[in-house]
Image (cartoon, rainbow, N blue to C red):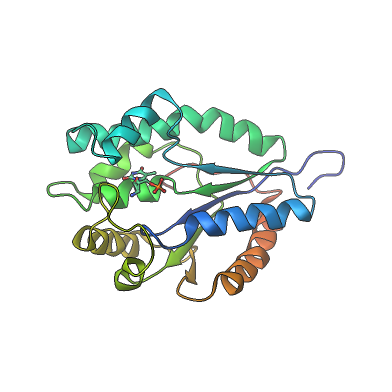
Length: 212
Ligand code: NYM
């Protein structure tokens, strides 16, 4: 970074199937970075607190039924609602650790009948792009052994298998794939090292946009 200017924050997104440990690992990472005095914030999508987020929350809890295309657009709108704030925070030097983002949007919707990846990608084009995607890779059989699988919409074996296939299709060489079957501490340590490296390396790089 140029001296006298604030280095921008890093935009680090965690992705994976349900129960892969994203929430635990994003929380652990934020705590670890805070103890190193890194300016950092945790975010998650969907953000269930906004107007679109409340409809999405009800949909996920099976309270309302929505057309597959319509709910896909709501998930995307829910990210667009945060786009300006994300850009501002990054520019001000805050690193954002994000629990799910556009790749979840595409991979979950495209697991439905008649929804394809290209169509699903379109509404997110132009959103701020992550500097890094950390993918917590876990076999569905292992995810199912963990707690609470089956509470919300989508938490079914066949569906999650399709979601994982979609993630594997979207994966690029720049994704950092983590074996999520290992003990929590070992994963957290690996991720902390990775995150510090990402924060350093993106400080003087411009933020990109999806899907480039
Ligand atoms: N999900 C999440 C989508 O279907 N589309 C999206 O754009 C996003 C961000 O919502 N099963 C799905 C994935 C999850 C569910 O996520 C809620 P979480 O992380 O369990 O709150």
